[in-house]
Image 1 (tube, helix red, strand yellow):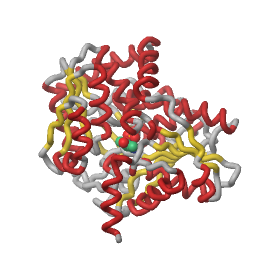
Image 2 (cartoon, helix red, strand yellow):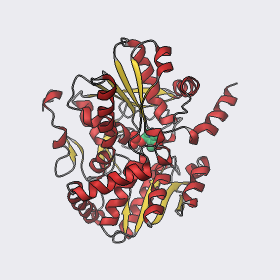
Image 3 (cartoon, rainbow, N blue to C red):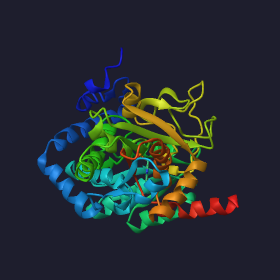
Length: 407
Ligand SMILES: *Cc1c(COP(=O)(O)O)cnc(C)c1O
C-alpha cells in the first residue's frame, strides 16, 4: 500500500477497532487476558467521551500533578547554540518528577470507575513505579510494583520512595532481572487477579487499548505547548524534539501537531555506546518487525527472534521495543527519528545544568542532544521546542560516579 501524504492523515482515525496503527499494534496476549483487555477498552471508550471523567482528570492534573507546565525560553542555551530560539516544555516540574504522572492519574481514575481495588505496575528505572505508588496512595488502592532485582539495586532510592507511599515492591529474579522480566511478572499477576486488579502500564506500548489510552493521557502536553507557543511567538514552532523510550512523552507532545505538516517532529532514541548489537536501544537502527509483550512493532532481536540485550545510560529508554504509533508515523515520514549516544548525553546533561540551572533527566537529555544539533543548523528567526520529560534528581548519583570514573 503506498503511503498517503502526511497532510491526508487523520490522527483521530488511529488506531482502528482492533488497535492497529497500520500494520503495527494489535492484541497479542494469552486467551486469559483477552476479556480483561476488552473490558478495559470498553470502559475507556465510555470514559474518554464522558465530560465528567475528563473534568475530574483535569482537576487532579492541576491540583495534584501541577499542570499546566511552563513553556520556558532557554535564553542561554539559545545563545550558546547560536541558531534557532530554544524553548523547553517543562514536564520536569510535575509532581514525582516526570510526565509519567499524567498517565498514572488517568489510569487510576479509570480503575476507580471500573470498581477495581488493587493496582499493579511494572517499573524499570522506578519513575513509573513512583508515579503509580503516588496515585495509589492518593486514591486508596492496594498497590504492587514489579521491578527487576538488578533495577531495584540500581534504583534503591526509588524503591524506598514507593515503599514510603505504601506500595509493595516485588523483586523479579528471572532472566536479566530488569524491565522486560518485570512486565512478564505483572502480566502473570494480572491474569491471576484480573477481577480485582487494574494494570497501569507505563508507556504507549503493549496490547490495545494501552498505546491509545496512554497517548491520550499525555496529549495535554502538546495541547498546552500549542497554546503557549502561539501566545509567545504568534506562530507554530519550526521543529519539535522529544526522547523516545516506549514513546509516551513523545507521542503526547507531538499528537496535537501531526496535521501541522510544516512543523518538523523528531523522536530521539538511545544510541548507548554506539549502534552495534547489544550496545544501544535504538529500535529504528537495526530493529525488525516482531511481537513483544502484546504488541507488533520494531524490536531489537536476532535472526532467531530472540530479544537482543539493550544498553543505555538512561534506564527509562532501555527497552527492546518501540510504541506502535511511532513505527506507523515513521513509515508515513511524518515523524523523523534520530539517536543520541551516552557520551553526548553526559555532555548535554552538564551543559543544560550549567547554562540554565535546570538538571534534566538522562532520558530527556537525549532530546536536548539532538535539539542542540538542530538549533545550530537553524536560523535565528526559527523556533525549536524540546520536551523536557523529567528532572535529573534521580540521576545525579549515577552521573557523579560516571564523571569521577572518567577522570
Ligand atoms: C520513563 C521516561 C521516559 C521514557 O518513556 P516514554 O514512554 O518514551 O516517554 C522519558 N523521560 C523520562 C523522564 C522518563 O521517566
